[in-house]
Image (cartoon, helix red, strand yellow):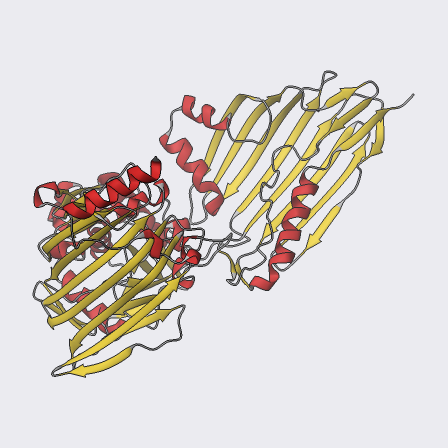
Length: 636
């Protein structure tokens, strides 16, 4: 009966949409279905440079959505603004048999502002559409054409745009004038592009077939290292009348100098404030700190993206008068303030975000790789870095948002690659002291003091800065790996500097922490810092392990126990030293006090896939050692 209904449906729909049979699911090779939420059936990308102010991009792509997890690919989103236009937007949906179910109509395309969190003044808009189906699998096809009125950047080609996606075929063709230097960098492929010449155009072509779905493994490098990708960059370019040459970082920086020219003029009233604030101060670092805090106090961040304003800062006078700006405007304002005080600084281009921590920009491909601006202030034998969008960060601190990475500073001559401050093993520390007392019924009462530094203090600092006292207590009561506990008192002390620190003082009561049965006490000496990583060996792993952050945790614990107990079992030290990290614990009973000392160091770096077995063993050893119990017995 079910087969008859399906056949009837098939013939009915075939009759209605004759000639529209495409992308039947039965044609997908079995290997491409394994582990996939979506299959890219085909993709054709054609990009052509007609002039420095006209680039046409045509795309055609079809996705077979296998399940709900893959349904996000039923949506197509196109952005547009005064520099980027949408010329056409078409689409269709097919069922599992490959029969046309629905065609996209212009009235079904949504159009709205592209404003996002933190961005309040933008001219970006998006057009988007979503096909929906209650039955899986189904296939969506989109065909678009867009025009860019600039050559400042070109879109990259990723055959697999995400994990759990397999690909039947994907191709990218780039046409450029024969005398134009198209620059590109490939990832995860050794194949050179097919290059041909047609009249006055040079044509670059890439193609891949039968890519199997993948997932991001534990401690993975960037996604582009796991699949085929090509990143494009211009040589000569133009945007809104500004011309540049990105063939070198020096040339790229000269373009930014053009954008910034004449935008460092401050109102006289602001200059007078700067002079008054720094009168009599001779130490450059102290001046920088005072002026940075002045900027923080009198401005706030608002995202402003208007045409060339996506790269050009608003005038310093605008920020001084309005009291707000985006990262470009605030950094340029701070640059202007320092200039008025006789201090030279550098507007700095950076790819910010935790996901880029310890991930370098492509040094060999000067191009637009940045999403943020900070300020670099050289002083004698040192450099002070300023994160100008923050109203709370201390002068000199970059953290995991802007630290540990290469950036491009804008000098008088152009762009230059340098590094922001590095936060490693000796900076990212968590030092904890616990003084605890165990009662006869197994309840543990303790006073805990923890000193968090650098990146380890960021979450704590953010919590106490932005949350009420009640919310802080709620967060604390969810923080530790304990079955049940109560925070009876807490307080914090912040030490703001280029290496910030937060001191946390807690009083904690833990009912039934120890198990007391007859004459024995069973207790975990490691109270608050149990490592939660327990790994499984990835047998077929081929990519490196990438640990992007180094840190050190140290715990000193004293637990006073009821009198009269001696050690029966579990009094053992542990020590593991590897190239990925180290772990040591010591444990002893002195009178009626358990003395426990734990130190764990995690190193940063890249390690080959062949190290997987040793990494898993190290983490397993730590996991077990953190949960080792001490058994005490009451002396007769």
